Image (cartoon, rainbow, N blue to C red; front, side):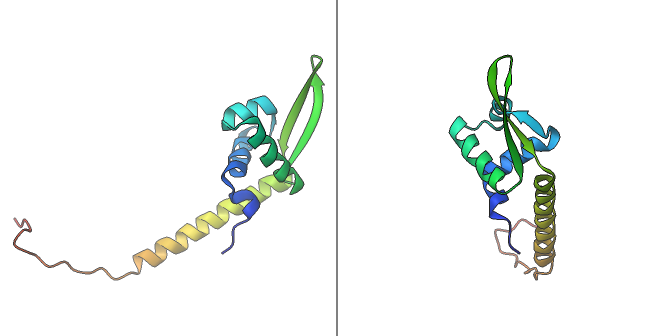
Length: 114
C-alpha cells in the first residue's frame, strides 16, 4: 500500500485537515489554526496548489492585500482517499495482529496465584 507523499507530509496534512470544516480561509486564520510559521504555511500551500489540492487566491479587503486558501474538490477527494487507505491499512494490521499465536506464560515462584 502506497500513500500519497503530497498528503502524508505532516504540514500539508494539517492544512488539508484545517480546510475540511471551512474550505476557504484567509492566510492569517489558517496560520493561527495550524500554528505554522508564515514560511511553512506558504511553502506547503504552494505545494498543495501545484498538486491541485488547494487554490490560492489574492484579493483586497478594506484596502489591504488578503490571501485565501481554498480546498478544491480534488483536494477533498484526495483527503478522503487517504483516510480510506489509512482505515484499510489499520484493518489489515489489526487482522494480522489477531492471527498471531498467543504464547502461554509459565508460572514461576514469583507469580502471584490466588
